Image 1 (cartoon, rainbow, N blue to C red):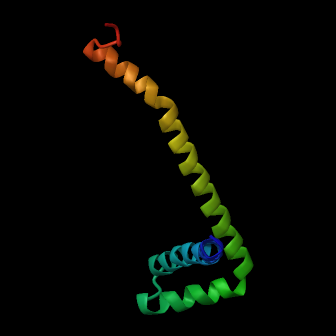
Image 2 (cartoon, one colour):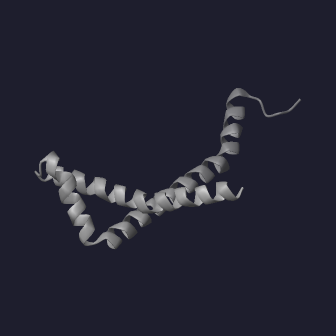
Image 3 (cartoon, rainbow, N blue to C red):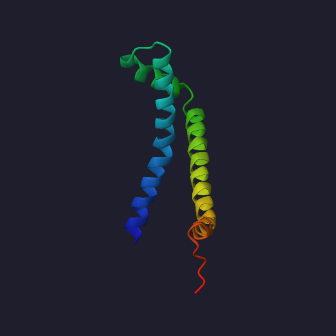
Length: 100
């Protein structure tokens, strides 16, 4: 149990650091390519830009990841809340209301 917790902690910590940076970097690389920077130089250009303000980019990526996660959770909760309504609509269509 202790080893599992230790490994899980480092996986989550790794994702919290690298996930936002990779999200920001991919956005920067796409922006650079769209504005005419060659593909071979886009990665270097994006990394230099991120290194100048690393913590700002990291916080932005973390905030975007957090907002996306919250949105996903809310979507799942909404699906589970509306699931009984969809059963009632289906039962109304096929005429089965659970009456014997």
